[in-house]
Length: 215
Image (cartoon, rainbow, N blue to C red; front, side, top):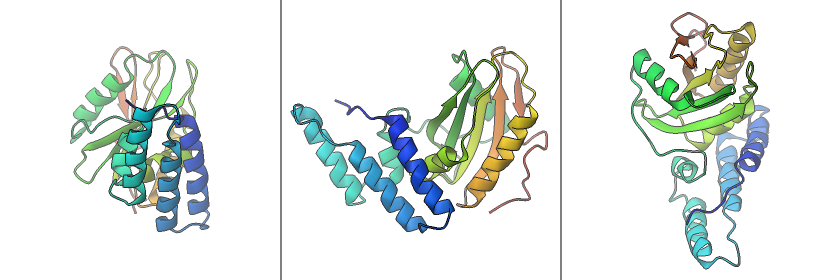
């Protein structure tokens, strides 16, 4: 039986940790330790549920003893998915992003976290917006990258209105996310915008991502 997790609460706490990391108040190792503590606390067992208690205590033990990597702990959270496949080229990213966002009526923003071989670690939902806009919070994206031990990140969001061309804000926010992730050594490989009719826009292909700003 899966333990119920308050995902927004966990992400908010991780965002605070990452804010302190970005401000230089925590070292990388300290940020990882605090992230592990947050995950551990999220798995507090319910006293009236023996099954959940046993599962939770086992999970806590593994996280605290570091027998769970941050990636394995992340996969156990609701909203994170098991490793799915490799994304090796733009066509595969287009297909993957369209499948991920096909049922969304409003704009939704994802960080697709991958390892060094471009194997998907987790699809992390960052935010849900309206029919015409969605916010991409740098600290939440950075938190997702640290939590999953991501090597790189693909960004993806949808335009339910049917036009896949990015807005000025889309491009500006992507560059801000790229800058934030570069600070922790994580590269933004692309930002894919998709529409309900299957049209796509790759920011990498169209020169909207500054690949000179590498780690």
